[in-house]
Length: 102
Image 1 (cartoon, rainbow, N blue to C red):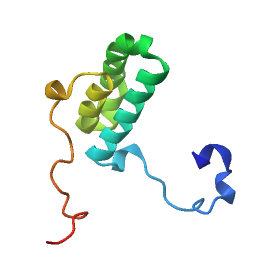
Image 2: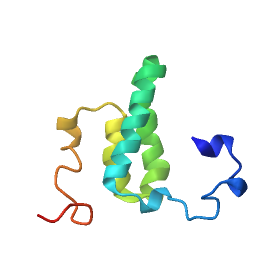
Image 3: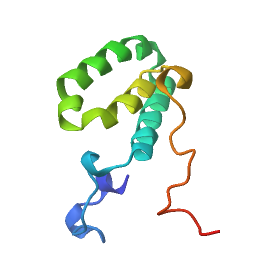
Image 4: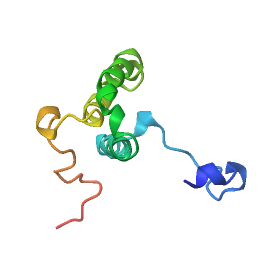
């Protein structure tokens, strides 16, 4: 990520508004959780069994109060639960603000 290598003061988007976790959609939550889940599967598969209890503890103690229920499903997917247990795929329908008119 460029933010790790370039000082924000010198970046082109240095003065622009940044996204935060309170304003992201459920699809963006799912994307973030899938990325983290794949990172764990690739870099540290031996800790996968400890992720579930730790993630639920973090959700109950912090995420539920700060980000609300929108963080639960992506977190459950992050822990490695299958889609049929957690719920269907997010984004199957078309968001009207992003779809082309037919």
